[in-house]
Length: 225
Image 1: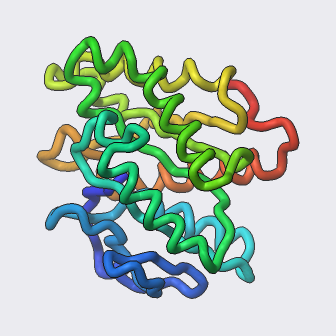
Image 2: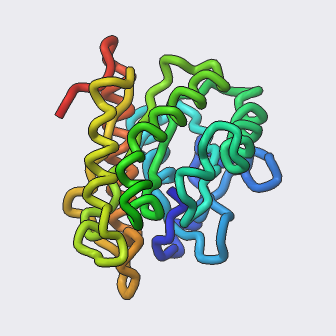
């Protein structure tokens, strides 16, 4: 979720009506990168989603609440864990002046390294979804989870990436307003076989926005695909 895409000059420009909750817990109008977890923070999918949403409705105001920390396992995002608690704190502060419209989730590379964490991924992610919705009083808010890059399925360093993607998909029938965003056709960075490149992250963000729009317009949740 914390993108590592190469930032171009155009990406750095703020966009009207898109605000970011920064590392000082302040709303700011800024461009990429919106994450601050690592010196390599770059283009991610969140800004691309916001741009598409503003393009769809120029009068809307979008607030992004970046909480991701790259390279972290799901264990650190379990209810009660450090990163989970930090994200809840930030969300509650940010939502004092707004309405939560969606959870954007893209995680799992670290859990694809070993069989036990990959096989238990769905059960543990389901607990995370339930906890976020309960702690933020958001039972109807869509939760969108992206596939790991398909290129990781061919990488010997992430031998259980296919299984993690399967685990994510397995939650669609059982979790209300939960959708999976495809990573089909997307590429990793040059000389970086583990992370999406900037163009792929921007396309991924547009796919997230399309699904979020679809769920928002549906009274029965996301369609199965």
